[in-house]
Each structure stands twice: as structure tokens, then as C-alpha cells.
Length: 177
Image: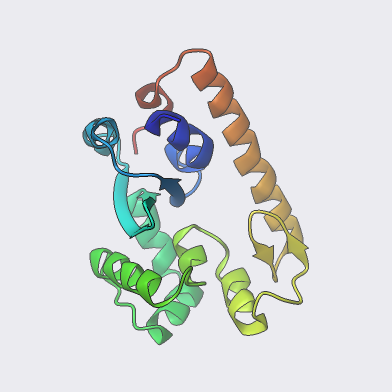
């Protein structure tokens, strides 16, 4: 699968500006992938490698302005500060990478992926149990809001995948923000 296809399928809400970040897992960062990063950066998209383990790279695809805003939200900031994060975005990303070395998948990743802070906090406190709804994440807060987000993100993925299959390239699909 090409890097463009991976982004279309797994990061379309971020490409569309609906979500501050998405995760993409790939075998390695190949030259074609790196070549796309520069033109996508001109559209406001950034890439941060979180882990490279057993030949698989985990890449955070994000929009800096949106991510800063999501992490600055009071409840998100509270969770992150208790886990040793700083408010500076780059330092927070470096700390997240460190946390991936400490744990296979640190639960606070949800805050970086625009999951509601109440759901991330609920997941941590309940150790992934006692949730109200399970979809793209486990919901402990507002079920209706979560269902709406699940639908919006899935609709975006379907539309972007369809457009990609009809010949639109990744640069045409990525909005400028």
C-alpha cells in the first residue's frame, strides 16, 4: 500500500481538518513517503515518528495549531501534566515518544488524537472497563457526541477513499490550514 493510500484511509479526518491528529502505522518511512511530507507540510500537515519497533513505524500525522488547542484544553492539560508533559508542543511530542518506550501504547495518546478528555480520563481510571460505548475509542462521557464524531470521521474516510480511488491525489485531498 502506498503512503498516499495509507494517509487517505487512516488520516482523512486530519487531512480534511476535522481532527487534529491521526496515527498511521507503516513498515518504514520510505523515500516516497518523505517526498510527500514537504508538500503536505505546506498545507499545514506535520509528521512525528513515535515508534519504530520490529520493522513497523508509528507516525503521528497532525495539524500543529489544532493539536496545540486540543492539548491546551483544561481537562487534557490536567491529565498531561500529571504524566510529566510540558505545554510546549514539541516537548509534548517528545514526551509522548518517550511514553511509547515506557508502554506499548500510552493511554494519553487519545488526547493527541482529539478524543474527548473525559473519555481518556475515564479509560485511564477504569483501566479500559465500564465504558458506555465502544467505537473509534471507548466512551465514558457524552455518548451522543461520540456517536456523532464516529459518524463524521467514518463519512470523511469513505468520501476521501472514494475520491482517491477516482484519481484525486493526496495533495488535492489535503485542505490547507
